[in-house]
Image 1 (tube, helix red, strand yellow):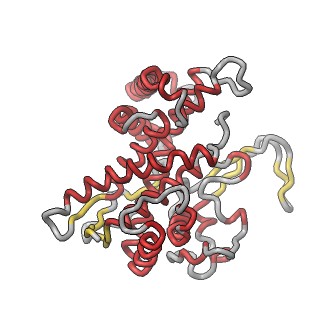
Image 2 (tube, one colour):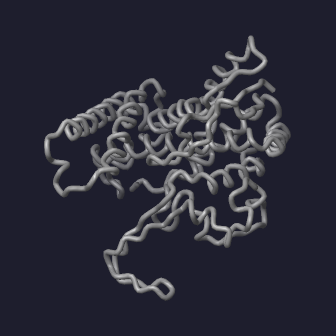
Image 3 (cartoon, rainbow, N blue to C red):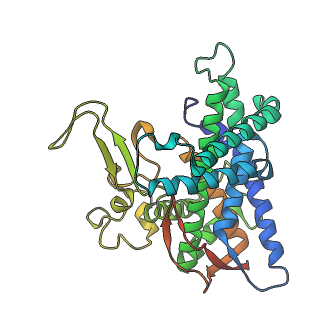
Length: 351
């Protein structure tokens, strides 16, 4: 992204909006428990709505409802892309006017059109705001060193919409399931949140960094269930890595999930949930932990994802206690990200 990583100042300015969005989603959950001691909820669906609303807000200053059609279209695109990945690749076949290819073209055209409309509707108010669209529109002004055209802005928004929603929603889903399975860590995390934020105060820019246990839980979740299970990079020149001579043009595939579960790196309990691995002062090899990638191409949205996840998980712990529902089936499934195939059902009680 030519706009570069999101600055700390901009990110901190978004925290109240992230907290307000989270509160509105949790209010709906709380309404379901009014006449019941507990209720079942698929947190995977719930956190997708939450993450979608946050992305819409910080990207456009709009709401989930305004961007809902874009999310639906991108979901259709993802399913078609998965089908394409599972079929034999024939060079040039994507230009043949088959039913699926026509659908792909229609979806892409409609997404771009919808984003263009959102930019036109929200552009004026966004330019003076601190959201993503405002930052990019500022960069599109004449004379800017990082000038961006409208098509480039649309492309960046497409990426931000999809990647930002999927990764954060899945992180919150797996973290909630892991805390539902490990009640001792759920209690520790909740005690910390109540100590730092109190019963009713929302996390803010001043106290968010004090949520050490919540951060450890999220980092361990990203180790066990990374959003992307593999990364690939292509060598642009001849290089030597250790004893390996790698010629230019070679594509290297890095199995992130295998690295994250490597017993030689993480110990004999590498398959187990142990947030203490990420306690202050503990170290690990830099190349052994890469949930957001590594190096110059590291994900520009990683800080936003972590802040959003901290706020949402902390506020969820303030209001609810949860256990795994008997209807939950553990079946991690790889699409573009690692997600629960049959949803993530938990039983929720009001704290």
